Length: 103
Image 1 (cartoon, one colour):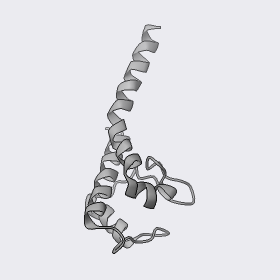
Image 2: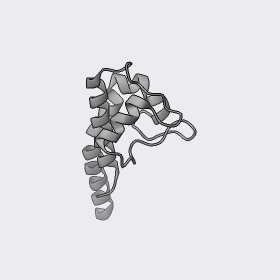
Image 3: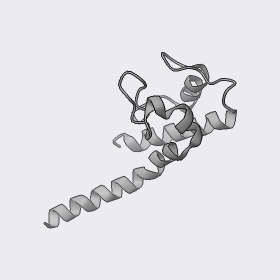
Image 4: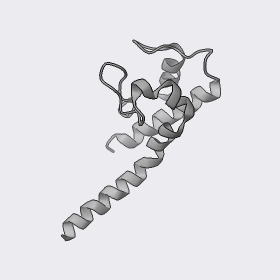
């Protein structure tokens, strides 16, 4: 029982640490409207629609480039999103990927 309590306590800490990053994507109205259909509410991805953003290894600049110019099936959002929105999305994706990957 003691080990089980420790396990659940550790899991709660991990969830609490990751929640702000995942929550940033989920609570961003631009992400919700433009991205979540294909990349999932928390950036988890969907087969046949869009890859996981949680596992990306792209740099901030590369992520901005993909958002602006598109890649594969993803359309570009150049001229459709303000630069501040692109910057915010890219930052949220970097945060999600850092929190989702093992350290």
